[in-house]
Image (tube, rainbow, N blue to C red; front, top):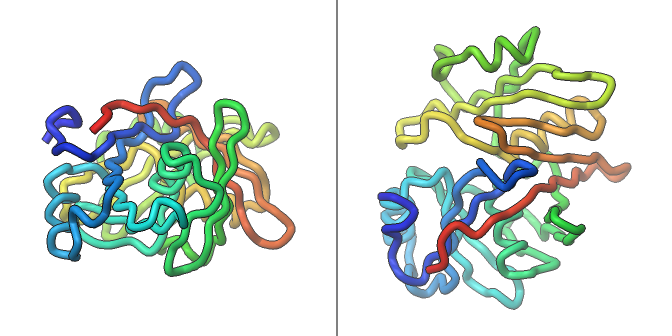
Amino acid sequence: MSEFDVPDGIDVLRVFCAPDGRHGNALGVVRDGDDYPDETSRQALAAGLGFSETVFVDDPERGRVDIWTPGLRLPFAGHPLVGSAWLLDLEVLELEVGDVFARQDGEFTWITARPEWAPPRELERYDSAAEVDALTGPPPGEGWLYVWAWEDEAAGRVRARAFPRRDDGIVEDEATGAAALLLTARLGRALNITQGRGSQILTAPAPDGTVEIGGRVVLAHRG
């Protein structure tokens, strides 16, 4: 299903866009979660849309949201929360794992989250950005893989690509906030990540162990 064939009531965003507004990871947002009241209907819609994640807004005033991939429900994911905060102009998003705080700063939307909320990811460092670019598909193996290399270590610039390596039709994830969160926590420093075809993710660790994740959001389709 293309992003312009989506059912009524669903907005499509691109999250973590490049400075010129291109790229970004597609996100479906169901503004009224009551339209899909149970797990079966939500899973079916997420699979039908085919985006890496789809968000169901269960309470727009309190910011309660529910996140699904084409194959499973997620307790936390970065790009759906950045996109939802931007679209709904929220300062707090309610998840089962905890409250996610959001803020707007010029062209960037930021969320604050804890690394332990992110699903497990294998983070594999490559020797050069050129090696990351040269990948033609997922490296052999099982499990969610985030490959990365320094483009400019002194400046905190990272080249990354993400491969879910699960049987749900998502071969490569264009921009992944949860993996950026985990990499930032591991390295303990602010990062400027270029992922996928050219999406941009900014991160900044805080003294309390949380990490801010920021990016640009573009409305691709109004439902």
